Amino acid sequence: MMKHRIDPKVDCVFKALLGSPENSNLLIDFLNSILAVDLESPITQVTILNPYNEKEFIGDKLSIVDVKASDNKGHRYQVEIELSHYEHLDARMLYNWAVLYSKQLQSGDGYHELKPAFSIWLVNKTVIHDNEYAHEFKMQNDKGCTLINHGGSWILELNKFKANSMVDAKEKWLIFFKEGEYLDEDALPDWMQSKEMRQAMNTLRQFSEKEKQYHLYQARQEYLREKVTMAYERDLAEKKALQLLEERNAALQEIQKKDSALALAQVEIERLKKLLN
Image (cartoon, rainbow, N blue to C red; front, side):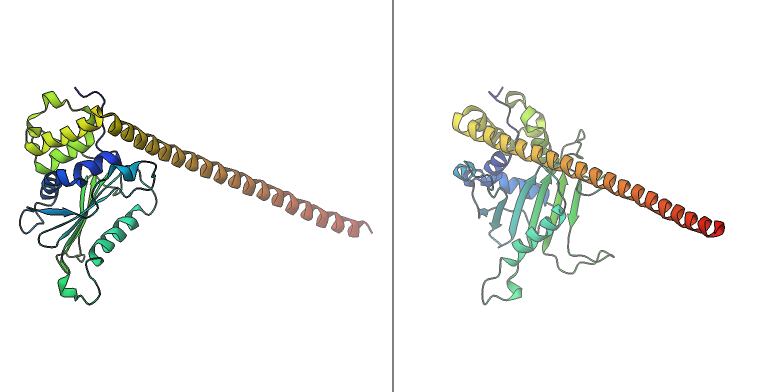
């Protein structure tokens, strides 16, 4: 058993797993597993464009934690994990794909030089409100006709994912990210008996056993907890402010009703006075 449980979804661990040059074979296996149906041929080589560097996480709460890579055909890939959900996350997903796709062209390049771009999101909250955990968004019309086959965005909702008895290549990675911290490296299930899965578990072990990396992991855990707590407190404050506003509006309406009744009473008094006179 590992000294400490390590959650592979924590940003510094996630990027070490898929964004380290020494783990480039893990990224290749992950991409081939997730995009198997959509790739012309399996990926055999990748260049990580923003490699993992543990120093970027130390004291930097705004670290870029996605993984960007290209293969020997010039195809672009982006993998990102998002543990929280917030308004306009969907817009961010589309924007990130658009940047990944458009950044290929330099001054003087033609549109014919554009290559497919694939954006993969692992999320732990519901983004698409249906019963499916996997969603693919491509450049198609409402009849399924493809404008151009240049990749798209893949959203994988871990909170919805439930593995069955037959674990395929994609599902093994989803299980790993969802349940990796509870796996016993010395008693791995059959679906993890591969070079890549053992290597992934070894990366978790390094964060568990090495003091410096474990302290980094703890720091990132604390940062994520702070984010969740701040978001929760912000939501509470917004709800309280909304409640106070509703109470204020209700009080104003009540005052307006009383003022209206008072005005009507005053009119009635004046009418009665005239009758008496």
